[in-house]
Length: 409
Image (cartoon, rainbow, N blue to C red; front, side):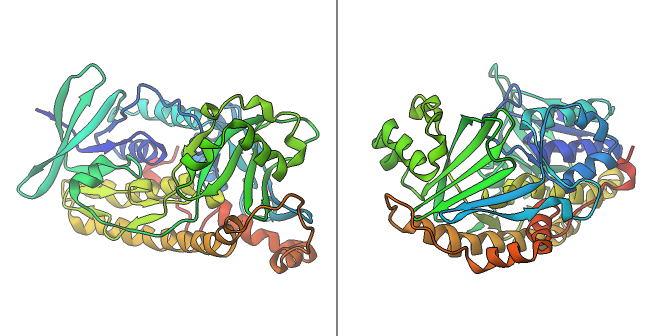
């Protein structure tokens, strides 16, 4: 019978960071990732200042700098009345005053390489968690299946669910979530970027339509928002109707919209905003998207997941080493991370209701009607120092976590 001290279901940002930190504490940890590699299109690619600081604390800052990435230090919104900056990361505290956009697979490869330097770290690719193993009402490990069909059991003192919003481990434990309605889904696609195009992150709002352009250097990672549940209806209109929608909203993209050759190039993100009422049961802890699915508003999902992992490692490493882990220890993780999660989701809900819901609920118009900037944006233009507030909330977060001493290099 296979055994480890901690088994982590899912090799995303939360799972990989947690695995690395626990291994540096001397805990035997095994990460199970169902895919053969980390290559995935349109996964979250934002590495925020608080995560960049964490990488420095882990001795990985110089390695990260060697990974090709794009640094963005400003956030802008483009309304019918023009472009207005609303977030200036150069004003936030700390060394890193930018968000780094890097393919998530490169970030995960970096963490995996660091983990493999630790003797108690094991990463198994192409290995899916299929079911929880329970003994006497307690989660005691997982059943797994490899890509070649081999099955087995891996027993552990703790299972950590880091397998996303559709978590198999969470479902197996019967943990219940509270869901908050969202007004939109997102279509993801790429568009070529030219040297004289706007830089940084750019949100485009008009009556009935919203898009976000993320400057990735040679291309824009583009998010086009559609009303919740309307994917099939909008796809039925065809590729030409889609192109007209995008060009109507952002006319200067007309010369490159044909690079989206078909709607097969457009990927759907089914947006959810939900949070478990209890993140744990005896022998199991959920963190990251498995505990709280975030809206893409602000691009903070990765940041929250990584912060969860840091807090979990700091709180649980000692009990795992001593063999004294209890549900009280797991509850401490939820107490630590509940407030920043709830506050961040609360801010996202406000944006959903007051901005996105109202915008997407209106009927698009052929010719945009130029109007004054909303009052908050007018204030930010008049008092530029106010741009530090949204920049700090997005870039640093409500309660940033720092690497525990045992994990620093």
